[in-house]
Amino acid sequence: MPVINDMIPEFDLFQPADVDGALELLAKHDDAWVLAGGLDTFDWFKDRAKRPDVVVDLGAIDQLRGIREQGDGYEIGALTPLSDIENHEAIKAKFPMLAQAAQAVATPQVRNQGTLGGNIVQDTRCWYYRGGWPCYRAGGNICYADTPTSMNREHCIFGASRCVAVSPSDSAPALVALDAMMVVRSRSGEREVPAADFFIGPSTDITRMTVLNGRELLVAIRIPSTFAGAHQYFEKVRDRNAWDFPLVNVAAAFKRNGATIEDARVAVGAVAPYPMRLEAVEAQLRGKNADEATGKSAGELAIKGAKPLRHNGYKLPLMRNLVMRAVRDAQSAQA
Ligand SMILES: Cc1cc2nc3c(=O)[nH]c(=O)nc-3n(C[C@H](O)[C@H](O)[C@H](O)COP(=O)(O)OP(=O)(O)OC[C@H]3O[C@@H](n4cnc5c(N)ncnc54)[C@H](O)[C@@H]3O)c2cc1C
Image (cartoon, rainbow, N blue to C red; front, side, top):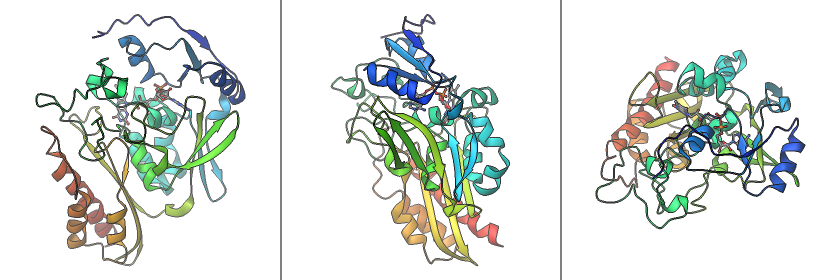
C-alpha cells in the first residue's frame, strides 16, 4: 500500500493560456490529468496512488474564471474559487443555497484555492480507494469497504454497484437542485449536460464519477433563473464543524403560493455515488402545504429503498431528518 511520500512522482507540466490549448493537450495525451486548484490532485500525487505522465494546469486560463449574468441566469467559470461564490452578492441573493454550500466546504484557505469545477469533479474520499488498495474502482475485483470487517461509516446507502463510495461534494447537490447545466467542451465542440445527469454511478462506469471522458473539460456552470429568489435551504452534517466532508447534506428549493408548495427540488449528497435528486419527494410535495406533516412524510419517502451497510445505518435518520427540516424551513419562512 502506498504511504504518504510528499515527493510527487515526475510528470510533464503544461500550462496552456487558453481553453483550446488545454483541449489540444488533452486530445494528444491519453492519460493527461487536469489540474485546477490542486487540493484533490496533490493528495493523489503525494500518495502516489495516481501517477499521470502529463499534467495540464488550467491556472493561466482567465476565461475559465468569473461569475457573470447570462440570459436570465448566471454563468460561473469552472476555475472560479469557492470563496468568490460564497461572497458574491447576486449569488447570495438569488441562489443562497449555492453560496451556503460553497461556504460549507472545508476552511477559508481551501475555499480560496479550491475551484467550483474541482469541487464538482473531485474524486470520492473512500479511504480504501484513496489509499491505493486495488478495489473495483481502481481496476481490481473487490470492494474493500463492503466486507464483513470493513469500516464503512461514511459510505453509501443508495446506488451501490460493487463500489460503495459516495460523492463528497457540497456544491453538487445544490447545483442539482438549481437545475444547473454543466458546460462541457472538447475539441469537437461544446455540450450542456444537466447537473443531475453529469454525475454517474458505478453501474454506469465504476472508474469515474462524472460523464467527463478525459478529453473534455468542464468549462462553466450555468444556473437558470428557475429558482432565483425562491425559498432555498442547504444543510450539511459533518463530524467536525471546523472542517470536514459531509456525512449527509441536503439542498432544496421551493416555489410557494402562500402556504402551498407549487414546485420543489430536493437533492442530497454523501448518501450515494452521485448527488441524488429526490424526484418522488418533489412530486409528493407539489400542491401540499409546507407544514410539519408534509415534512415528516417527505423525510420518510426520502429514505425508502435505502440499503445501509454495517456501520452507516445512522445515515437513514440523518437523511430523513434533513429532508424534513428543509420542508419545515419552508414553512417557518412563510410565517
Ligand atoms: C482539507 C480539505 C477539506 C475538504 N473539505 C471539503 C468539504 O467539506 N466539502 C467539499 O465539497 N469538498 C471538500 N474538499 C474538497 C475540495 O473542495 C476539493 O478538493 C476542491 O474543491 C477541488 O478543487 P480544486 O480546484 O483544488 O481541484 P483539483 O484538485 O485540481 O481537481 C480535482 C479533480 O477535478 C478535476 N478537474 C478540476 N477542474 C476540472 C475541469 N474544469 N474540468 C475537468 N476536470 C477538472 C481534476 O482533474 C481532479 O480530478 C476538501 C479538500 C481538502 C484538501
